[in-house]
Image: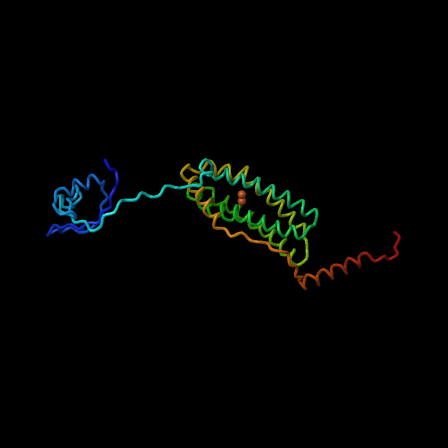
Length: 268
Ligand SMILES: [Fe+2]
Ligand SMILES: [Fe+2]
C-alpha cells in the first residue's frame, strides 16, 4: 500500500453550503483518496472524508489542485559532521587557534613585519569564522531560547570578542603605518588565551549540558552553512604609509627621551 500523502485544494459542490468552507485544503493518503473518489465517475470529484464537512455530511468535493505532500527536508550534514557535536567542533577550533598564537609569538620575537602582516590576516579570518559567525551568529541565538543564564554569559563572551579583534586591528593598522607595536599583539594573545580558557572550562560546559540533541543538529548545520559564506580577507603585500601625525608624535617623544638623557655632569 502506498503511503504517499496528497495535498488537495478542493471546492465543495454542495449547492446550498451555508458554512464558510466552500474551498479549502485537505491532506490525505493516496489510497484513501482513491477510495473517496471511487464514489464518482468524474476523475476530479471525491467524497469529503467523514467529519470533514462542518455540516456533518459527506459532500461532493471537486479537486482544484492535487500535489504529493513533500515532507520537510531532514537536516542534512556533511558526512564528517554526522558524529560530531557543535561544542566539540568549537573546542577543536580552539586548539587550532592556540597553535596559531604560538606561531604569532615566534613571529613577534623575530619582529618580521611582513610575515606578521600576512599571518595576522589568517588569524583574523579564523577568529571571524569561529567567534563572529559560528559562536555569535549561530550558537548564541540558538541557546537563547533554551538557557536562562545565557544573556549574561553571551554579553561577557561578546565583549571579549570585541576586545580581541580591536587589539588585532590596532596592531595591523600600526603595521601599515610602519610601526610594530608588539605590546598590542601580546595583549591580544593573552586575552585570547584567557578567553579560550573561559569558554572551554566555564561557558561551554554549561552550554553543552543545556542544549537538547535535536538543537545540536541544527546548530551544527547552521555553523557549517555560515562558515561557507565567509569571504576571507586576503592580506596582500604590506604597503607602509606613514601617518604624519604619528611621525610628529614619535619625533616629539624622541626629543623628550634625548632631553632626559642629557649628561648634566652631575656625579651624585
Ligand atoms: Fe570560542
Ligand atoms: Fe569566543
